[in-house]
Image (cartoon, rainbow, N blue to C red):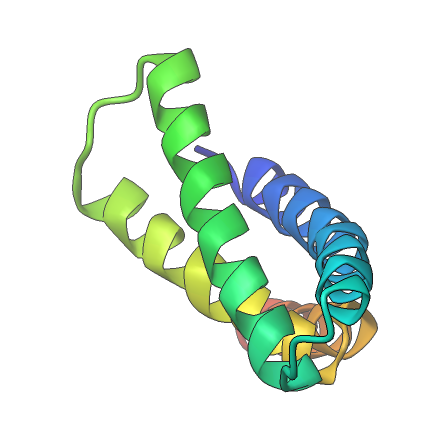
Length: 105
């Protein structure tokens, strides 16, 4: 898996998280079920990132190794973080870290 593929997966999960969370909120409101919006968004992000990461591993026939495990854990964490603070903030931070690392090398 390349870093570009990882970022694409993060974008997909973040987009689907927003859509799925809104759909679930509507369903919960219809049934008059109380919920916490941030917790719901976090749960949806984690579930979707696990699903997308697993689907990538299966469809690409990737062997699970240390690199894939790190990407998978990062996808789950950053998807949750993006659901909490926003996708733009997460990408801005990643970009700043990459630029800083390139300048130091």
